[in-house]
Length: 115
Image (tube, rainbow, N blue to C red; front, side, top):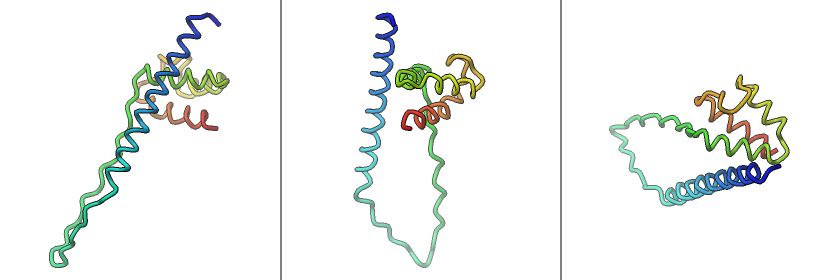
């Protein structure tokens, strides 16, 4: 493996690690901001229906983020699984995958990475 491709893999892993740190910090912030929920008073005379909870937003991934995740997966000795994922989404290379398929692709890649 050349020094440049090795450097490219290391940088991709650093990007992925940074993104995971951001996600973890965000999750911790959300967890601790909900510790003291406000006490709600219910008026028995005029009971109101609550609005349905909004659907959770699907995280949008950039090409670079997906590339880092897929490179990390391939770097863990799962090149065949990485190639199979691309094929599943009708692509022979990552740049052929549609942007709207990135969240599903990342979710499947994380399942493979975590065993």
